[in-house]
Length: 387
Image (cartoon, rainbow, N blue to C red; front, side, top):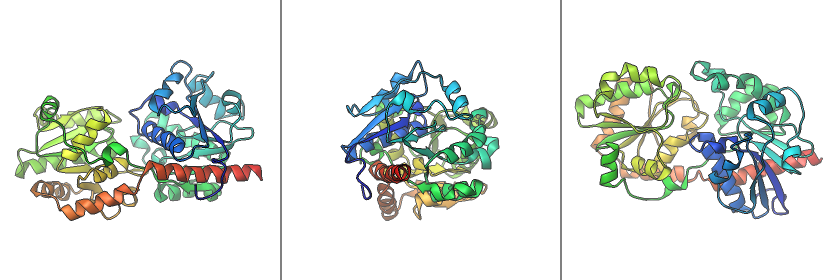
């Protein structure tokens, strides 16, 4: 810690851990990485995971390291009931369930009222404000809930300067309490491992050369343009394959129907959810990683591709330039000819110097640094409450 000594003297942190019950979600993976890093970098930290799920809450324990300083506190309120109550009234406080806390971090979407603990609230993006047509009904509800939680919190954590600016413009009275904490890349992508074994690659139907996308199969990620561009790539690289790794999201069924002819061939492989080591191996074996997202609060998947040593073609939108620096091949997602050209160029071979520079850039984003920054924010909020 660069500031304060609260954790070294013992800090009990409550963490809203509902997302840990679904390890496939980006918020769930990020929360698990922060929890593991918190107890790794400071022996004074104790964590009380508080999943808002009466029946499955105990499963949150399996998403994080087996450290005795991490415990799971079982909720006595169903998730929807808790969210409804805490969106309207300041009772019951989190300490009633978790016991005495120094700080409580709402990692996803609801910050309960607190008696003595400092409150930290995370805002990952403002898609429900700026691109609501891409959001589910539950996500759209955040447009009403988030301002209440921001005002309840002592500090608000965002993943990029881009989101910080958007949030400050949306809720200007609370701008002074916004703090940027960059996320990290998972260790499995940082390791210089190998590609998939030939039998496993054959079982998944992957053949080289291929371009890969990792993330939810979501209309916001502009997979329409990815598929349009890939059709053009196939004109000059007929053996090329597109590998999509991720679970279906908003708009995917309609996208798949529009490209039914392409999906009827083996030119596109949709692999769904896979274990992290396999995803990392698939990314390492790709000629290029493509990410044409229209709106991102940060952009972990292309950053993980960079640290794995795979060139990235990305849309120059939202927070992606902040996350990827000068190390992506930038394109406009509407210019399918340019996207196709950028993808096709990487089938001709990669620039080793550029790949290594991108790897070094991405390697700076570690979950240990994220956790250290979170501890600074925790300490700052605790001092405010104690003043």
